[in-house]
Image (tube, rainbow, N blue to C red; front, top):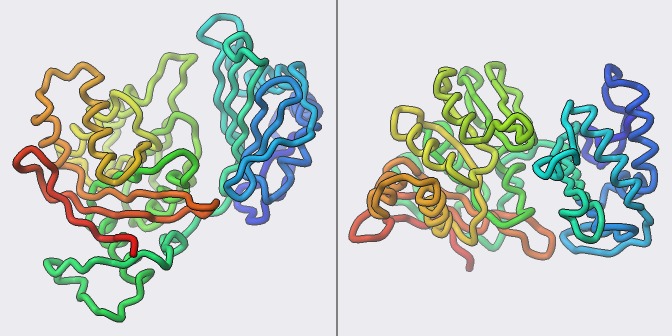
Length: 353
């Protein structure tokens, strides 16, 4: 039996995984994980990091702590090999097979084997949220909504509560099929927030999700999920292109990090609206610049201005998340209104006060 975090449990509890899994492999994996189980079973711990031989760290409430847990290179190697067998992958036989990513139930595991990991086999185990959140869960009290006097459906009221204002605006963005980018740094909750936006989508829409490692939780009835696979040389960019032949109403890319940025904005500009994606950036405005960089790096023979105009014509809004003292929240939210005189024209909808 393999113990992993339970999907849908809000206490971080640990439970037996699917019964159809090979029992022998599951028992082996449980044994290999045994020294880490107290950490994986602790609901206050979000991430477990093995930096090498007996060098285990955790993230608890947004802070990193070194533990006294002992986890050997053999333990790490056993975990990686068993997971590779379960996912029908080969690890460690060639140079390109020293990296490994897998998602099981509510746990995402990334591994780098020695000698690429010079201090010994390295693991990073992220316990995913396990529960879907609503949009109002992300609204900090110190943010103030900025009125959009051109939006007739949202009247400005000085006494209007921020959560209601922002929640209504985000629902309006999704329901009106705006193309939205969710930006933020590492571990700011971009994927969990993306799940919250997906929950607002109409059940009649056909949704196709594309991820590097499967993390999104989708309960729409007409949903197709694609996952990139390095062992099979199938990239996120390949999947974005293939998705256009699958009659999507909406496309969601779990994380935009390379040439798929070009194919995604091309899709947005050719009738596929209502798309969502996340990317790493330092601010909402910086997210637009990151898209430019990714498109230029994929070899597109366009000028910088042409790329910027394409981005401005298809990206309607950017929501930027941040983490302060372990609390994940919306920091900024901008609406993109065009590109003129060498710069993006945007309207800020939230600001810190």
